Length: 236
Image (cartoon, rainbow, N blue to C red):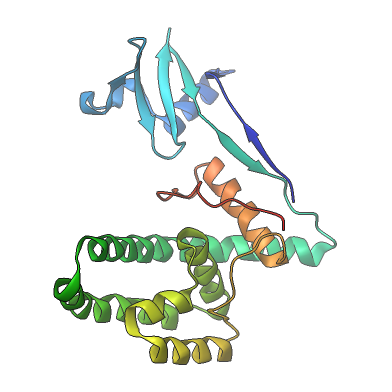
């Protein structure tokens, strides 16, 4: 699996005809409709706004939209051995799109609690943990129950990619080793291994998911999360 990093310096997007221009305006926004509070000024005095979906600066230069992107990570689409591979790739994409909002919610909640715990110490931390751990863990458990087997596996992989911790580790951290053990047993019964790390180089399924993530992010189909670029695919 090969990953390429491409630096872009003011990518120009021109409309070929009126219909395309209208479609382009809908995609990346129109300066006339951007609230003044969203407009910013760069070091050279040029006005722009930051497009969250594209993760890029959008300028208006003589009526043409100009997009500046610091870095775009591209990944080769995995090599498909047969039609079954192609079908499975499409299947995983559907599962990824369905589970992604739940993943973003769980990630945000977990990071908020983790950040708060880091600011506390001693009795304050223990008290905070007691107040919040059951609520967060119950939400994880409810989400896991509602997910199908394949969706649960994708959810577990996304959490590991974002936090560096397996879902088993997160549950153990919040509820203790005994709870984590039983949730791993339940996961194994449903063919979901909560201890298995995310590894796009050694796992064919993870390779597919990484490719789908980068593709969906690059095209703006899925929103990114803070630190999504921190994960580095390394070949051991």
